[in-house]
Length: 113
Length: 122
Image (cartoon, rainbow over all chains, first blue to last red):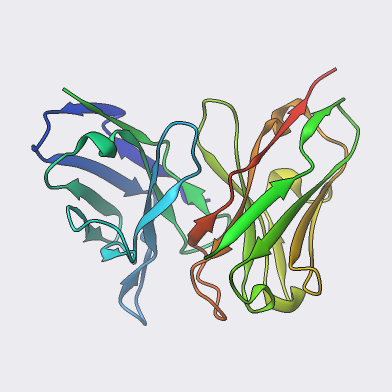
């Protein structure tokens, strides 16, 4: 199984400042024939189901604010929130869809400082 | 718009069975791959099972193989998860999720239901 890890476990950022969340996979999720990274990011607010933010490591889902962006390739990925808003308080998960079993990172909790 | 509504959760004793349902609307259900993903209370996310459009393929995480069966009734726009021989570690909120790939499954999740809680306890 591909093991996903995230860092940090939690972080507190001032409103308007940037939040950075890292995700690492135990093996590459880059499919060479398509040159695509099979990596997605989700946001989960308390009491709600997860919400898709990013897929293909850097493609923003329709309707997601452009302050959210993703980067990385191979085994190392990053989610950025460029200017943190109060409504961004949530837990963020990465997920690999390179192979089954599909696996998620443990989550990173983002709070306001 | 897309709606996924799970039902069938509850409290069940270890070793017993439960069937979850997921009613879909707002999209052409029969053309989509659908998954079950679960989340134990206060924990992370775990993919459980997938069924391709028209039921052409199914797959499961190892811990539920032989105990859980995913199925669909496209005439009713409904997904099912038959869970047999339940264990305490199956306790979780179970989410029905739509695959983001449309007619070609990609195995990320673009819409989620609100989930249904399954508690396995004596």
